[in-house]
Image 1: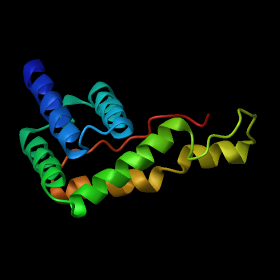
Image 2 (image 1 turned 135 degrees about the horizontal axis):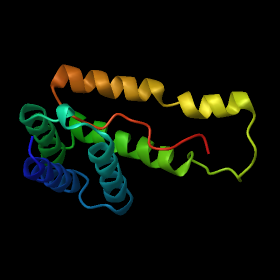
Image 3 (image 1 turned 90 degrees about the vertical axis):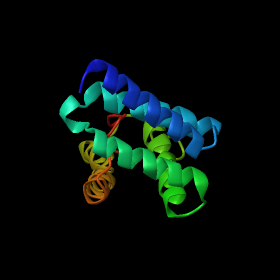
Length: 135
Protein backbone atom coordinates (compact mmCIF):
# COMPACT_ATOMS: atom_id res chain seq x y z
CA UNK A 1 0.00 0.00 0.00
CA UNK A 2 1.16 3.49 -0.72
CA UNK A 3 1.51 6.16 1.94
CA UNK A 4 -1.72 7.86 0.83
CA UNK A 5 -3.68 4.61 0.98
CA UNK A 6 -2.41 3.95 4.51
CA UNK A 7 -3.38 7.48 5.54
CA UNK A 8 -6.87 7.06 4.07
CA UNK A 9 -7.25 3.67 5.77
CA UNK A 10 -6.33 5.22 9.14
CA UNK A 11 -8.80 8.06 8.63
CA UNK A 12 -11.63 5.74 7.58
CA UNK A 13 -11.05 3.39 10.52
CA UNK A 14 -10.84 6.31 12.95
CA UNK A 15 -13.96 8.01 11.58
CA UNK A 16 -16.04 4.84 11.67
CA UNK A 17 -14.66 3.95 15.10
CA UNK A 18 -15.69 7.35 16.45
CA UNK A 19 -19.18 6.85 15.12
CA UNK A 20 -19.31 3.38 16.67
CA UNK A 21 -18.41 4.69 20.13
CA UNK A 22 -20.66 7.72 19.62
CA UNK A 23 -17.78 10.10 20.36
CA UNK A 24 -17.81 9.19 24.07
CA UNK A 25 -14.82 10.64 25.85
CA UNK A 26 -12.88 7.76 27.33
CA UNK A 27 -13.57 5.45 24.38
CA UNK A 28 -12.58 7.87 21.63
CA UNK A 29 -9.18 8.56 23.17
CA UNK A 30 -8.52 4.85 23.70
CA UNK A 31 -9.52 4.14 20.11
CA UNK A 32 -7.27 6.91 18.81
CA UNK A 33 -4.29 5.70 20.82
CA UNK A 34 -4.75 2.06 19.74
CA UNK A 35 -5.07 2.98 16.08
CA UNK A 36 -1.98 5.18 16.28
CA UNK A 37 -0.03 2.39 17.95
CA UNK A 38 -1.16 -0.15 15.37
CA UNK A 39 -0.29 2.07 12.42
CA UNK A 40 3.06 3.13 13.88
CA UNK A 41 4.29 -0.29 15.04
CA UNK A 42 2.51 -2.41 12.46
CA UNK A 43 3.88 -3.32 9.08
CA UNK A 44 2.29 -2.27 5.78
CA UNK A 45 2.00 -5.98 4.92
CA UNK A 46 -0.57 -6.34 7.74
CA UNK A 47 -2.91 -3.98 5.94
CA UNK A 48 -4.83 -4.93 2.87
CA UNK A 49 -7.96 -3.36 1.46
CA UNK A 50 -10.13 -6.42 2.06
CA UNK A 51 -9.29 -6.56 5.79
CA UNK A 52 -9.77 -2.82 6.18
CA UNK A 53 -13.12 -3.03 4.40
CA UNK A 54 -14.26 -5.84 6.70
CA UNK A 55 -13.15 -3.87 9.76
CA UNK A 56 -15.02 -0.78 8.57
CA UNK A 57 -18.10 -2.92 7.99
CA UNK A 58 -17.74 -4.33 11.54
CA UNK A 59 -17.52 -0.79 12.92
CA UNK A 60 -20.51 0.25 10.82
CA UNK A 61 -22.62 -2.57 12.28
CA UNK A 62 -21.43 -1.56 15.76
CA UNK A 63 -22.75 1.93 14.98
CA UNK A 64 -26.10 0.92 13.54
CA UNK A 65 -27.27 -1.65 16.05
CA UNK A 66 -26.64 -2.35 19.72
CA UNK A 67 -25.79 -5.96 18.99
CA UNK A 68 -22.82 -8.27 19.21
CA UNK A 69 -20.44 -6.00 17.29
CA UNK A 70 -21.20 -3.07 19.59
CA UNK A 71 -20.66 -5.18 22.71
CA UNK A 72 -17.37 -6.59 21.40
CA UNK A 73 -16.08 -3.11 20.60
CA UNK A 74 -17.25 -1.68 23.93
CA UNK A 75 -15.54 -4.44 25.92
CA UNK A 76 -12.33 -4.21 23.88
CA UNK A 77 -12.11 -0.48 24.49
CA UNK A 78 -12.78 -0.96 28.20
CA UNK A 79 -10.01 -3.55 28.53
CA UNK A 80 -7.59 -1.50 26.42
CA UNK A 81 -8.24 1.60 28.54
CA UNK A 82 -7.58 -0.26 31.77
CA UNK A 83 -4.52 -1.90 30.26
CA UNK A 84 -3.12 1.52 29.31
CA UNK A 85 -3.80 2.90 32.78
CA UNK A 86 -2.17 -0.03 34.55
CA UNK A 87 -5.28 -1.73 35.91
CA UNK A 88 -8.86 -0.99 36.85
CA UNK A 89 -7.86 0.52 40.18
CA UNK A 90 -4.44 2.06 39.87
CA UNK A 91 -2.16 0.91 42.68
CA UNK A 92 0.47 3.18 44.14
CA UNK A 93 3.83 2.95 42.42
CA UNK A 94 5.85 0.27 44.11
CA UNK A 95 8.56 -2.22 43.39
CA UNK A 96 7.17 -5.45 42.01
CA UNK A 97 8.71 -8.84 42.52
CA UNK A 98 9.89 -10.84 39.53
CA UNK A 99 6.75 -12.98 39.54
CA UNK A 100 4.41 -9.98 39.73
CA UNK A 101 6.22 -8.31 36.84
CA UNK A 102 5.89 -11.47 34.74
CA UNK A 103 2.17 -11.68 35.50
CA UNK A 104 1.63 -8.03 34.54
CA UNK A 105 3.50 -8.50 31.27
CA UNK A 106 1.74 -11.74 30.23
CA UNK A 107 -1.74 -10.97 31.58
CA UNK A 108 -3.07 -9.82 28.22
CA UNK A 109 -1.55 -12.56 26.05
CA UNK A 110 -4.82 -14.52 25.96
CA UNK A 111 -6.81 -11.43 24.99
CA UNK A 112 -4.36 -10.60 22.20
CA UNK A 113 -4.53 -14.19 20.97
CA UNK A 114 -8.35 -14.06 20.92
CA UNK A 115 -8.27 -10.79 18.96
CA UNK A 116 -5.86 -12.32 16.44
CA UNK A 117 -8.16 -15.34 16.04
CA UNK A 118 -11.17 -13.02 15.58
CA UNK A 119 -9.24 -11.10 12.94
CA UNK A 120 -8.28 -14.31 11.19
CA UNK A 121 -11.77 -15.80 11.17
CA UNK A 122 -13.55 -12.60 10.11
CA UNK A 123 -10.79 -11.16 7.91
CA UNK A 124 -10.39 -7.98 9.94
CA UNK A 125 -7.49 -5.94 11.24
CA UNK A 126 -8.29 -4.98 14.84
CA UNK A 127 -5.13 -4.08 16.80
CA UNK A 128 -3.89 -7.00 18.89
CA UNK A 129 -0.76 -5.79 20.65
CA UNK A 130 0.05 -4.90 24.22
CA UNK A 131 0.47 -1.17 24.63
CA UNK A 132 2.28 -0.90 27.93
CA UNK A 133 4.96 -2.62 29.95
CA UNK A 134 4.84 -4.01 33.47
CA UNK A 135 4.75 -0.64 35.28
